[in-house]
Length: 82
Image 1 (cartoon, one colour):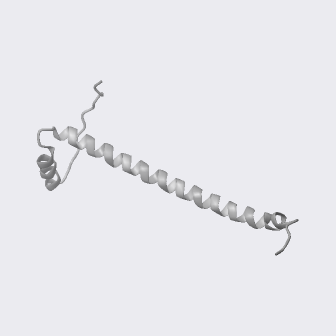
Image 2: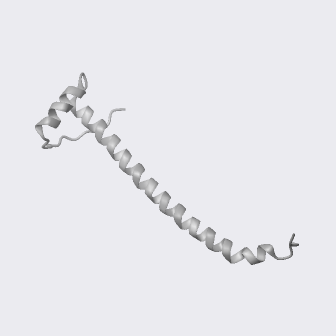
Image 3: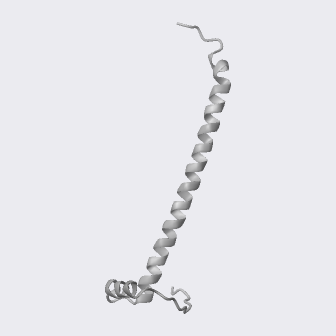
């Protein structure tokens, strides 16, 4: 299935255009640029998700430590000391 496309005008530095032309090979520049943008967007989304997960894990860890401290006395109740 072919995706719909739209034509846009983008201004790029000449050295970047030369690199795109060299790398594109038999592919069109448009295809190479689209693939590169998809990969870059995927990486940005992945980085954002990892950051959110890390923040969530940190918050959960703080809650776990607080709960452990809160119930420490209850957990030891009724146990014989050796």
